Length: 122
Length: 180
Image 1 (tube, helix red, strand yellow):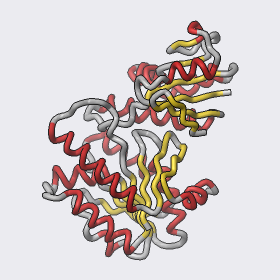
Image 2 (spheres, chains in turn orange, blue):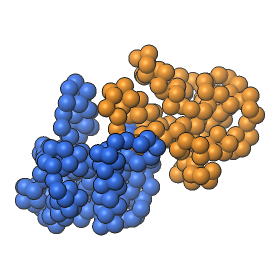
Image 3 (spheres, rainbow over the protein chains, first blue to last red):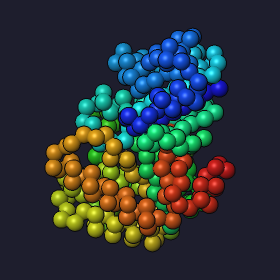
């Protein structure tokens, strides 16, 4: 089962994810590994892959991990600002949105955190 | 009929707006009003991406990087997809130097929606917490005002959150979209 948690910065997304998933601190990370149950800051992973020109590998990288059990992905909503002049910055926001669309379609649950409160979108 | 979709970068709002325009048009003519000024290779790629998305759906494209005043007449009786309001406002401010950009844009939109079914795509640009220069802050304030006025006036209004619709009003259109 896959849960997607999105929202602005400092809204309590990780705390919400930790509680909802019943995860220990050691099971929360910003990379995909077998023992990790909550992946935080997906936007940073997207940025890393983009910088290396490997955007096509992002979804397969995530899927290999979340297909292995109950997983939660947490991501900042970085696409809600002025569209930046810098092409890489623009691409990062667009690509993160595209990945989130794919994950939201695949996920059983999608929750948007607003001031620590979870709004169930799916 | 007036419909408006908002959402952030890559949120899937264009896809929803296209689907609704096709749904409303039935067998009437469909128009795509493109407001983006195309700069460089990246801009060209964006245009290509949106063109591919619309391919085979039978849209006639009108490029309008300034006023939209002729659109109501040209598109009368059809369905119009206006993409996007954020570029329309930028054109009004920085190309046309309009004194009352919000008033002018609302007037154009009202005229179009009186002769055709109009679906508008706008943008959520309000939450990056960055303090910009006065010009950009004015842009943000005016887009916020336009979005608010149009969400209030619209028959259907929704935010696309990564392909999930958060409907503000017009549930019946959302149900019709779900059935596609």
